[in-house]
Length: 281
Image 1 (cartoon, rainbow, N blue to C red):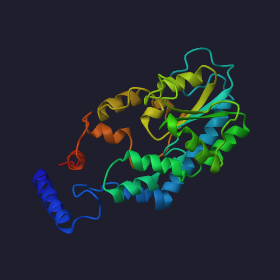
Image 2: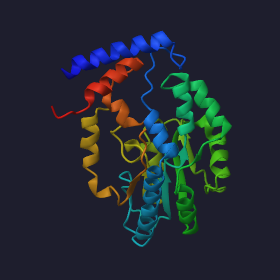
Image 3: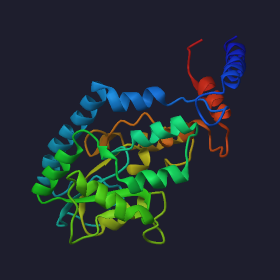
Image 4: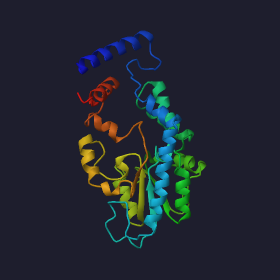
């Protein structure tokens, strides 16, 4: 019954948007990120939860500084007790808010556009996620090195650095702390190699991110079930050494819904999401 209603809904939807021409550039686009974008951009609840996450991070940072046996990185295997302290933060949707870019995608009628992304990064318009600047400035004041591990490409490093600095984020002028994708040969979209790189020289007290890939390997481009299986092994890290910033717009969780299928149309993605909801019937 539910599936039949869904099929009717899809048919009617496409009849309507075809008839009116649709406001987007692609008649088959189903804009399903509107609520997510608006929640980030306009809700007090988003400000509250992001701010409280960074307030918790401040408390945990102090706790980690007092304990030389404390590390947040599963890649930190050698003796690290005497290493100087550091934290690793993701960039997009962890410290930089790109919701305006995703709003542009909604207007363009697409899930992603390389040219639009390139223009967005070079504009350096991203704003700070609530609480992030204050927390990272506090970490710096405590003698903690702040590393930004991002999957932005290396060609965007200069613009990203400028965007971060313009908002007051601390960036070392002595150490390369902005570690971008493909900056080194083995620095791919899986962030394990970059966490390991930092762990060789620093005791990593906290990891802060918006996606499971910011914390541990084995969660990227896999099913939802496998992601949960991997992450459940590290529950003692949650809210203790790993701080997650809310990101309802996109992430590994969304790709996991497609069970590793690439090249799906917008309509196919919408159908998978619709049928993936649990109605308890």
